[in-house]
Image 1 (cartoon, helix red, strand yellow):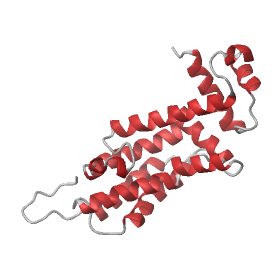
Image 2 (cartoon, helix red, strand yellow; image 1 turned 90 degrees about the horizontal axis):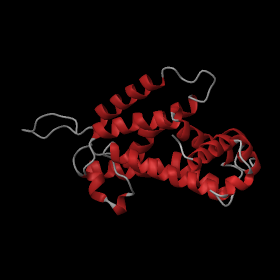
Image 3 (cartoon, one colour; image 1 turned 120 degrees about the vertical axis):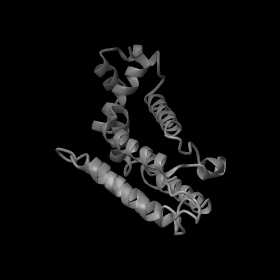
Image 4 (cartoon, helix red, strand yellow; image 1 turned 90 degrees about the vertical axis):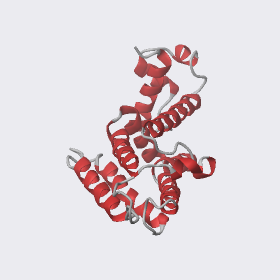
Amino acid sequence: MKDTKERILETALGLFAREGYRAVSVSRIAGALGMTKGALYKHFGSKRDIFDEIVAKMVEIDRERAQNYAVPETDWAADPAAYAATRLDDLRAFTLAQYQFWTADPFGAAFRKMLALEQYCDPAMGALYQSCLVSGPTAYLTDLFRALIAGGVCRAGDPAQMAVTFFAPLFLLIQMSDADGGCPQAERLLDAHLTHFLNEWTAEPKKGEAEHVQ
């Protein structure tokens, strides 16, 4: 059973995703929960405190998901060994899970939609949108492919271009999921893209080595 703080976070995020962060007051959140503002303030001191807790929860979810799929949890400078040790099969599974999270998970989908609504109105929201959904993933993948090229897992190429080529279809399909009726073939299209990309960029095994995808 969800505790009160968890219910506040999920209700507030749902409102932020539909109406925008700036348009939703503490009174609006409390009313949606069927509680008084005073009762809500026992758990959070302000709307900003609620937002900050939502972001903290998102960071923790992201860390746990990376851990579950054995891909790097932080940036390259903090843990280069994790980048070098990443298996392409794990990256593939993680990418499919990312699509599910950002489109079908109630928390992930609402967080993404909130940032999409607010990105042009608030520079901080715009920066967070970029970090979570655009430039952040692209930089992460650039570092990952650079490490995998250096380790002989991927064939030589421009890691930044590889990152864009890998990520762009995922980003597009996530956006298409918001259309009326969604994108029924999205997962098949994404799976086909990943298969093509990995076939294209997996390094040829050295002579004498068993052929396998890392």
